[in-house]
Image 1: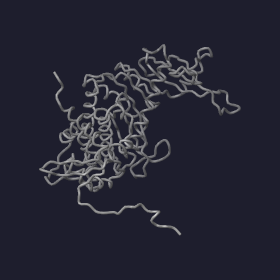
Image 2: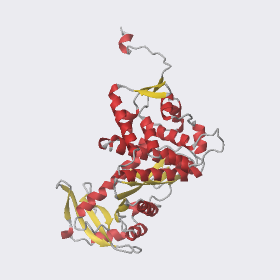
Image 3: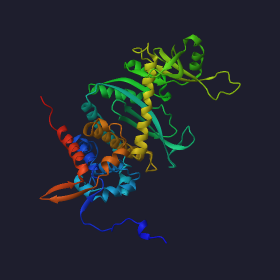
Image 4: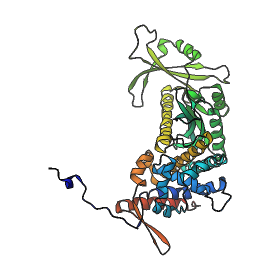
Length: 437
């Protein structure tokens, strides 16, 4: 006979009137937003409500940003922030908008421009604090599959929205995003992202030194923009008729084995040749890799697969293997896209209106960049590569008890988390002190 007690945990459930929070770590993100000027930037760049009773832009944006960092997937998940009185008390979030209010707010077209300015100002602050001067830009488009009526069919055969994203690889920082319909070609807007980022970095006294892209960036306009701006590019080449014809001119003795950073043979070969397009201002180099097709069909004439990189990297012209390894690191852009989409819930499109989804997505980018800042400046190097999912497990989901005593709030947490939160808050406080003369 089964003993029911052996199948149950031995505790009793009781109510408490204590103010608790299951997400103490989210207060770190809000305090970081205050310290980095994000909340002030929202107040400055987004229009306040016409009525005093209306919710302020910071209440919309920061509530959603906290929700995204905390793992919310849809607008209805904002209730988890609203119901967490302990978190709201700590962050001084007197009002949290409901899903319906958010749905109306993101439909206001003017909010997108204000959010982009806020994101740019946060990115500028991160760059200034990083101390870095030269940067690499990775641009990549990603698809958000959806059945929304306003979405269009993409080249893969399903309805989607397409987002063009650009990242400074040196900081994992998103500096540009364009939310478009799925039918838009992935390369549209690449030159504009490149030019805008270059101008913007110059305004900060910084330099855009390198640009990397997949084949969506393989166009004369992008090549010419890089040449005009003295930017070194590595771009995956389209294997069009001209490139294929160029590959056929490579002699057998011009192929060389490709070694990895440890000096081990990769099983690939590479060769280089000079190439140009009808509208390019300057010729560029094609670095061609080939490897045998293990599933080659019996009557195929060419036993090789090819991968081609276009570059104007004449500084490393004698070391094509270094250029190949450098270009391969652009694969991190796909990881950034995955983190924004899956980690911060941006693979969800809440509205039937494209522009409303763009506003929602821009807040997701803000949450992503805020997380980058928290990791780099207030957590430390050991946290750089951790995803938001790991941060939730190790930092955000810390239970705490909120107590008010003598008009002072106290957050009580377990001993094993106390030093962690204390050290992070001390770093935030020190970041606000003026730099020594």
